[in-house]
Image 1 (cartoon, rainbow, N blue to C red):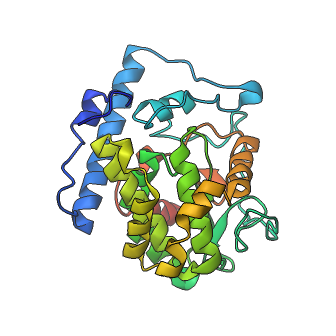
Image 2: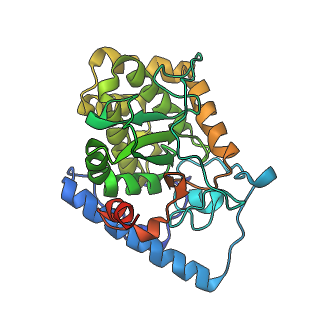
Length: 304
């Protein structure tokens, strides 16, 4: 049964809610992501034709804190920035982010040891956490673990990004943040913090399985699924050792990696971004409506 506290879905969203009785194949997930991207584009076009909805912002252009809800629903990105699911401007003043990977580790309590000074962590060839590809383009992905648009982007482009990283074409830099006000983000980041510190070789796969779990939660509209036990199951699927995953509940309760969440969120806000996912390629913002295929990033890079 759907929790009454959930945000109501639009017609376009309802058509994308599917049964989770069986695990979809990679091809099915990619096809669903493409369909979702197309539906989002069409929905946004309809909205823009009807009316231009003002962007909700805080002081100095920062995204206003959205109301706390049991699940983000379609309202989350609309609150942070109308159209954020389609095209993501880098900054309100029109300037771009830096193309360089942050220098130096954060080196502070409550932040995983591999995490950089801006709250991000990187992947170079071999998809090894904390590495970079020298001379490669930098692909920055700013995301919130409670953002289903972020999951749709990563589902569509995951294989492509892995190929680009392993080819030495790009360095992947992941920037987690909490802009949607969801406790789920804290839960996942505490679990991910443990994995990065104690089982880093499985951190990226856990990132993926935790994101897939959120898709199930979102589609079911069931907050009762937001549990440490389900994160443990996602970690097991990712190959994370039981010795690490059994610590999830305590880390979540103590908010062990709260400082990491704060660091990533502060970076997002300081850069003036207004929605997730925000994607930068060599410091230039990427219009996701222009890369709506599984090879969209590769094609964009080839265009130079």
